[in-house]
Length: 218
Length: 242
Image (cartoon, rainbow over all chains, first blue to last red; front, side):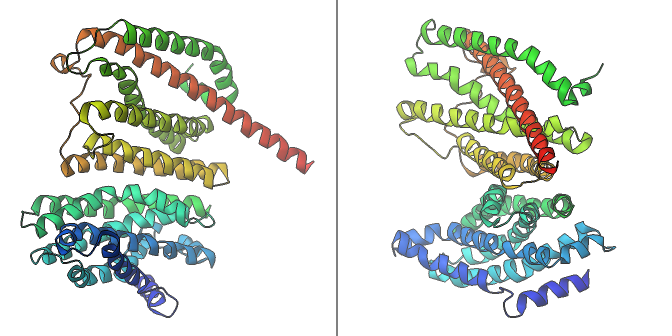
């Protein structure tokens, strides 16, 4: 398992691995928002938590394409499926690698982008907390989407259509927690719900992903 | 004699050709009588005037939109556990019907909402969760369309239907938490106090029965089409090989 994690991480960090692309996308989305809605900091600070959550979610979604597709093409997935490691565990590791290379950088970059959107001062802490709690769920759910569509040629758009509705609960609770934090309300309830969703998806989704991948590898 | 006998496509087609005319007839009878009764022979409500009558389309279609998904979930489970092809095809056949039901519910709701709430659309929990349900239906159909091998497609869509059901329920409660509702409470429930008045209640029941029969007839009909389509493909494949 450790070997697989290290392999995935190395592949992501090496040239052409696409590390940082998600981050750059997040930055661009955040920069484009003021052009779209106008530069008034009152308005921006009101929508900042939601925009940052949405940007992180889209950045996560875009990087899902690479999660399994390359390994599918060169046959690594077949090897993984026949290895003694259960496919559920292998996919959990892959989701973890995806989170470490995409989710975690997004969490760390979010406060910086928060400045651009005039996020109120108490919001920074809760934004980071809610993203840190929520992005693992995005990676795990995304792995399921990638496993479903890995056999489809040019399945990127299809995957977005499948994965985005599954992201709804995570986004609602995550953005709500960040918004409540930014406006000085108590964000405990949505944060707990968000943590529950993350824990639940981490526990259950690998089985669904493995089931879907087994069908595709048949 | 058990239900599983009809997992055999030949038996299924024989049964459905016998019951289909009955279902079509019952659907037509219930819908025509229920709608005419509802539209022309019930009084206008105090505050709502004649707009109340959209209930005869809105409530049944909204009920069916959810029930069709539940039926797809059951059919997917049967396919995953017992590998009956008819079951997978029935789930596939039901999805477009579910989409149309969801759309009818959304559109009639919008038409009613414009004069009553003063807006076509509001981000009310019920409205929002129906929109999300619509997206789930779209994803399900798109996945069926995208995969060529029929067994792989059936497997993957079944898994998606299972996971989607969990997330649809989650989303329902999440949006409840997220925004306060504009939509009134349940029009129909086992609790008598909550129900609409009897004048509207009985024609509504007839309309619901009509929608259920319409759905049964459509699904049986479309499943039959899918079975025949697959047979034609098998025959064509055999011809190419010969």
